Length: 466
Picture 1 (cartoon, helix red, strand yellow):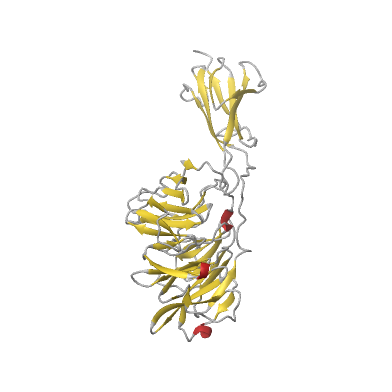
Picture 2 (cartoon, rainbow, N blue to C red):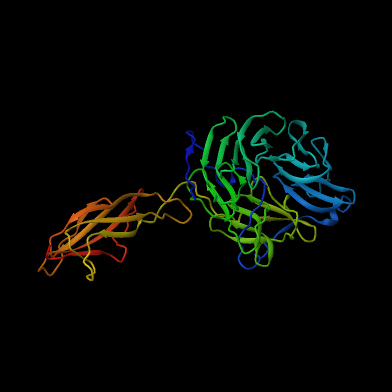
């Protein structure tokens, strides 16, 4: 599997990290949780079922920085109600942007809500006095609420939220099991059936990032774009979740791993240093919160639900609070700021390169270890730079070989002699013993230890007779 960036924009991107833009709830993936469900995190109540009983029973929730949207279900069907998030005493409303919110809640970002009304989706907004329009059921609302992405055949058509004008049309496949798109600010990220991920600048149409075969391309494999902000992209592959960093500070990171349960297409959202999503484990399903770079792992008290097209949970615009509907039909929230992993904005590398192996290619004498018949031979070293945890290594900048030699009839070795490079063609005197080692230096100056594959040195003794 290759995850090498082939194309990068010439412009300098903003280093915004995971807090750059709010989360988008798209398809799903399995999050590893070990043999049992994680303990539920402490939460606070937002809405009790009794508070909205006159409308129906809460089933879904969407949270923005300013609004709380709740889908309620009654005998007459589903509708969405909302109120000001900052004012729990505010009256509930059943209209938004002048439109009645009849249908099932898909999601909300900033001042925009998306409602599934069967054959079409309703997009309603509060800006500029409010408004609404109908769009396709294959519409994705972008984080930041600037754009929509509409699936049309083998293309993703990007439009402003408030008007059906095509701003950008990009090739993308939504057929079969390889599909997906995410929008964040003025970026759109798509996947095609060849497992190539591409990030476009919506305004210019330029390619900001392109990575081929980000997921294994077997017949049973799949590749889904789940979520994105202006720096990171979250994918689901058959083998688990993959987090990609446009700024290439972090290495491609398997933040969500498959567990013992079946693979399901469940919602996953990317927040400020966290990922929230449903996972499968050996004995059932759960909803987890994970710090994306080795941070805290916990759970949400979200009941199992066979409906995985819509989330029972949602992150706010800042990506710091998650709201969900619990088993008692109450809407609750968890502050994630103490859970999130810190996000680096520049590369650090404090680990020196290591010697993976050192080999001597020679005409060895049978039955006499490390003895060669020909004085001419080749020494080759293999050196790699692992870097700090989760971060990309700075890379091996220099490799050096060194040797010390003891001539025939001598009792001790001479001084070390350093040879630049990872390969050396050598000739040693007959009867001599020469011991080789190697070391590497990375791009930021960390110098590794002298070593060989079988210890500190690899030696060769040349036979006395030709």
